[in-house]
Length: 504
Ligand code: NAD
Image (cartoon, rainbow, N blue to C red; front, top):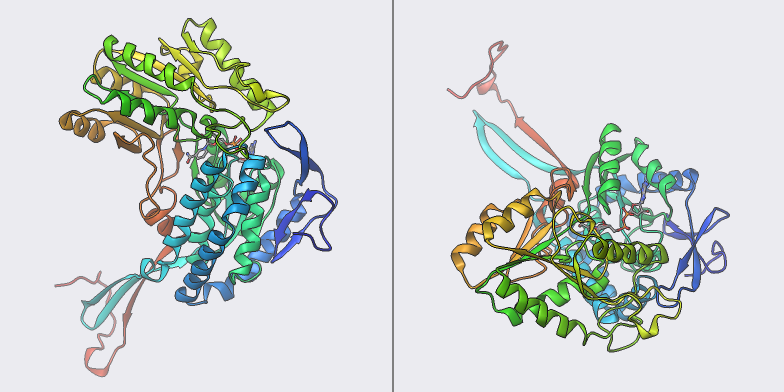
């Protein structure tokens, strides 16, 4: 990744097909498993972001006119190159995010599936055609790219979430500027070099690292036509309102607090193993993680808590790069302190801490390790119930009926994902039909839609209309144009018509 612009050990930007690193402010990047600073990341100035926008704008006309099939072929090659570089990408993910290697490979695989979907773009961009909408008049709709579009992504999926966005955007003929999380920049930046290797022309994909200054430049510059955002709810709301106020199309996916429901008839062993992965996988740093489980009936709750506690104590927590670990560290020291504080708040509020992960990891040294925590008797109003913790903390809420659980889920501010564990088809159907949540699982703990469906929550988990990736991405990254055409011949000339035309 070195060239004449690389300042030693500083991750820069990728503009117009080249790595760019210049004298700008920087921020340290940490290895969460050791707490050591491993490199710095450059924080783009307004001028650097404007340079990226200019590069994307200059690349747009030729790329827009490149046949969709040729754009799709770039995506086909990119998919193969990603597969060839899987180990390298997964290692960078583990080094900067902290997730275990097997999970990093899973993230990459789900990202690659979005690249695969982008290879179908010639089919997806087919318009709608109507012959003879009037005498000798034909009409059709086509889907044109918007121009320069931007994406702003979170730390927890540095490869997958960018791949939700830019492959489909550029396959549709747009050019793109990506602003990744400053906590986990390296794997995202590597994607840009690999895309060039796949034949993506310079300027079509640009990456600027940075913070609020870079984001605000993207949100206010009139050359940027649309913004996709994934991150926390307060920032999502800010991105949505600011971007819309500046005339842009915006989709902003926010935070979550996902509930599972365990019914008395559920297969408890299956629910326990599903909940372990959903609550503690990736150290709970997933927007589709399950941090709350509503259990119907005390008998079911007693059995579930006992089995969960038993299995949690068998989990192996340690550096993501060490084989055999189930869970790595949290991403940063401030985040480790925030999650630990939530555990203390839960105890103070009266929830029963069945498994305390604080100080429980032998490897801890200076890394940001918090062992899995399990609370029982969590209640509405407690901060561990209301707020997104984004850590390895699972809370059991004891309830008496499905109806009660559904009312609680619907009353919560977030509506990203949910799932029910049951053997009762009628209850499952009623739940999935009526619950006010965007993604629902039935005996599936993490109902993340596959790449040819679209991903998005309801309520304050998503601001905007269209969901991420899949069919909604084709609509988000294109605008409809409807053309009505007649080639008059002597026989059909009508002369002047002042009345509204209608099909009589
Ligand atoms: P974050 O909101 O702190 O940051 C997301 C992005 O916004 C980053 O690129 C960051 O640099 C930028 N940003 C941060 N503060 C900003 C500000 N004041 N002004 C402008 N830009 C700013 O989120 P995070 O901590 O990186 O990621 C975790 C959050 O993302 C969680 O809330 C999680 O639920 C959410 N998330 C949601 C989804 C989803 O699909 N709904 C997916 C993944 C993560």
